[in-house]
Image (cartoon, rainbow, N blue to C red; front, side):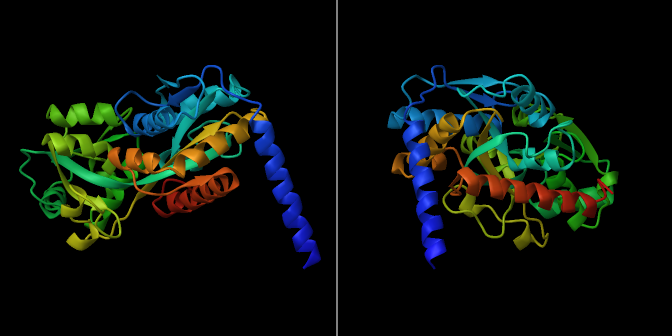
Length: 327
């Protein structure tokens, strides 16, 4: 009992010391790196941070968003680790899709231990989307067409075979009894490019996330055939959209979103970002901005966020073996 009390006291003292040290650091040119082209989920992730920090006055200098597309996060990850490991002014958006790519070894020589994870700011859920004037009125309509001829429906998604959005499509067609290797799949760099292809009629359907689809839903440009969640999502327009499960297809895909810093960022600077996200996520304004951007509540910082992300990478390695992507 005494040992536990001493251990708890030491841990609290350490945390208070780090927080005090963090007060000595302030980013001079704060930067949020979205590792894809504008318009996708990474962009949304950065905008939530930038808007909430600005609204709450948590940074002394305005934060800018920069885009670093390539490899669905791989280019940004490698750049931060290899070229900007101690850049304390920068935070980089990360997602469950990034964790999947790490599990598949798509980030090159670097694994999940190569950076310092700061926070998870919210979660999202996969969606299957078609144009508003698509002949497919339901997920069943779409999958019946795929069953009749797997090459007749062109699916688009951000990333190549094995990416998060590919996994959503693969698991969905597999739930209908179709071998994912038979489906017609068109890869894109990010969510913005997939959306452009869908609206231009170059693909028949796309997989993405609810947050990415929100603006298109509100504008009436698309129809979401299914949400890949256990239960219907709260609030309109999602409360009116059926899940894949309630339509008879047992597919669930959750996408958390958060941030990391470089591996050599000082403890003081790292703690500054942990404290800043903690303050932001405790506010009603942050919750409001997160909801406006289509994300749902999931808030973690520091070690809790790091443990959650690393466990998800381990889980994705198991899933990759299950679907035959790795041995």
